[in-house]
Image 1: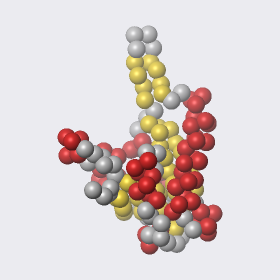
Image 2: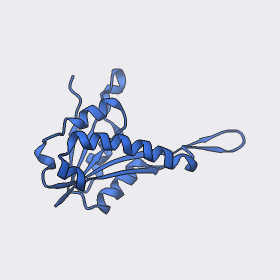
Image 3: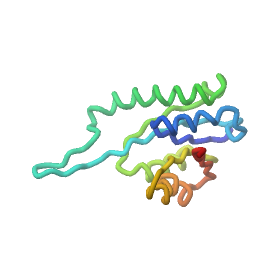
Image 4: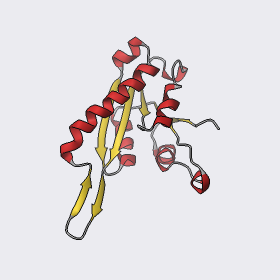
Length: 148
């Protein structure tokens, strides 16, 4: 059975794009890994650095995130696929590095990612997360683009 990693942003636009995967032949006979990686931010002030989110918040954020991931999984998977799928939430200073490590760890054959709709000058540039996957992933990438 192949491993497919589905990178889930918790934004409504991306969730809607991922839900369009239902019945997609790319996901047949696969163990699905629904994954969200929170970026840890470090802010500096005059007195000390501030880290967001703090480690005390990790369990609360993880539970809430997994509920959202469960909703995505239920929209995409059949009951059999859902029973075999995994919901993962990680916290990392570099989500790009973490996704690369995770892909290798689970020996993924495919990574699915929804790219963000960008407007104005921002629309000239690709999503850096998606671009990173395309350049450095050890497996195939399926990018879901928003429809205009």
